[in-house]
Every structure is written in structure tokens, then in C-alpha cells.
Image (spheres, rainbow, N blue to C red):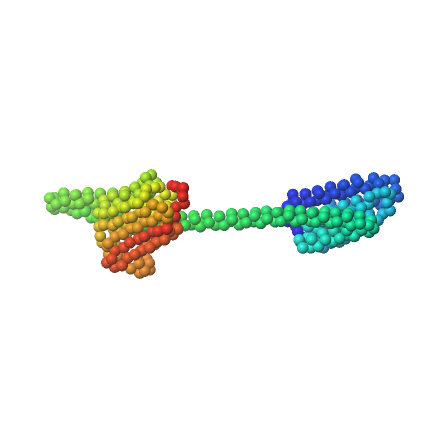
Length: 401
């Protein structure tokens, strides 16, 4: 029993069936008014109509009811055909078979429904031949067979369309659930990135700024002691204190710039990289040679990601490479684009660095490259420098920040 049918389909099929039953009643009943079979015909048609209207709710409650229902309706149809006639076109009663075809397709699995439609079609042919005893019966029978097939096909098409609609709705619901999960994963990834940035800043504050402030504290205490014992040395201590405060200020500005590099959003990636080179020179004395081929804006998340990668790589150069020079090459021509950062410093063994917890900078770079769907290559060896290449960053045509 097909239970979860759309209300509109039920209304359409049963509405069509009611029209056929109503047409049969209004066509045939007037021939029997005033005859001995008047109430017999009216009673049979009334029973047929009541059974037709109650088939669906009863079938939903009683398994197998629909098969008995079809047999009873065929019996009523057969009785109407062979009631003695008074010039009535009794073959018209065969119209009552057509609504049963629609019910069979709606109430039963497709294969079983088709079997019943075949039974109705053969029943119509047989009764027409028995009624006319001539080739006229064959002609009328073929007409009713065509009607049964047509209604069955239309019902099947309607059911398939409704099934496709329900499957589409189920798929849409699944997609919505999947989208919600993806949004949750994205929020988790964003939270993780936030934690990583927070940890990085904490390390920066501890490793650099806090040490500078600690040195400032010691210098101030030394100046206070020298003020009483050797005042001539106080100006040198104050100069050193001023130098430390300027260094602390520069470090804080660098951290703020790391949090939100305004030049990336406002002026684009090439300008931001050149500004980053100026800041590294002022901060660490690191000379960064920036070379850009092509000049265009990229989607904001790509510019932000490539800037952060460069920032992380140059920070590693300043801390670990032991050199005062590095180069950055950005290729914006064509698609995909690429970025490389290179130095000729101390170098390291990439495979060994991956297994060391201290190399969080490389892990951050790898995470950012994955977020950009790019490819990361790290070429390095002890005493041979390091080259970080970010490639296969695809930018869709017409997509801008």
C-alpha cells in the first residue's frame, strides 16, 4: 500500500474518477427511471460510488482490502451490464472500469498495480465482446483498453514525479544537514586558527617584548644605583633605556600589524609585502628583496593567507637563519599563482623539523597553504639555506577581493 502520497495527486486522480462515475450515472440512470430495475440500478451505482470514495481510508487500515475491493467493483460492473435493458446503451457502464485503473496505480506497488490494470483491460474487452456478440464489441473493447493504459501511464508518471519531488526534498534536507556540519567545522577551524594566533602572540610577547621590558627594568635599577655611586655613568644607562623602550615600541607595533595588516586590505598584497620588508628591516635589520611579477588584486582570503605565510617565513629567517638578507618572489601572472621565500642561511633538515614541536612556524605555514588549496614545497639542508615555495593557488577568473 503506497501511503505517503501527495494530497494534490490524490485529489487529481480521485477527482477524475468521480467525474467518470458522475458521467456514467447521469448518462444511464434516466433510461431506468420508471422501470422495474430503477432502484436496482440506483442501488448498484450508489454502492459503487460509496466503495470508490472509502477505498483509500479503509485500505490504509486493512492490508489486502484493495484486492477484494476491486473484485467487488468488477462484480457490480458486470451486474449493471447484464440487467435487462430498455434501449439503454449498457456498454457505457464499462466507463466504471477506468477509475479503478487509477486507484490500482495509486494504492498498490507499481508491478501489482500494472497487473490489475491488465485485468481491468481484459475484463472490459471480454464484457464488450459478450455484450455485442460482434466485431463492434472488439472495437469498443480496444477503446477501453486504450483508456485503461492511458490512465495507468498518467498515474505512473504522476507518481514518479511525486517520488522525484520527495527524493529531492530528502536530498535537500541532507544537504542542509551537511551544510550545517560544514559550517560547524568551519567555526571549529576558525576557532583553532584563533587559538594558534593567540599562542603565537603569547610566544612573541614572552620571547621578545617581555625580555625587553625585563632589560628595561634592570637598566632602570642600574641607573638608580649609579645615580648615587657614579652619576657620570647614568646618561649612558638612560640612553640604553631609551633604546630598549624604542625596541619594545617597535615590537608592539609589529605585533599589532601582525594582528591586522591594514595594507593588505587597503592596498593589496604586493604593497603589503613591500611594507613588510620595510618593517623587517627596521625591526631585525633583515633586508628583504621583494619581486612581484604582475599587479592585480586577489580575493581577500588569498591575499591574507599569502601575506601571513610570508610573515611567518621571514620571522623564521630572522630567528633561525643567521643571515641578514632574504628574497620574496610573488608571481601574479596567469592562474595558478605562486609565492616563494628564500634565504641563504643556516638551513635545516625538513623531515626532522616536521617531527619537532618547536617548529610551529612551519606547521602554521602548512596549515595556511592547505586552507588555500595550494601545494607547499620546503627545500633546505644544513648550511645550504632554505626555500619555501607555495604553488597551485588557483584564482577563478573575475574573482576579486
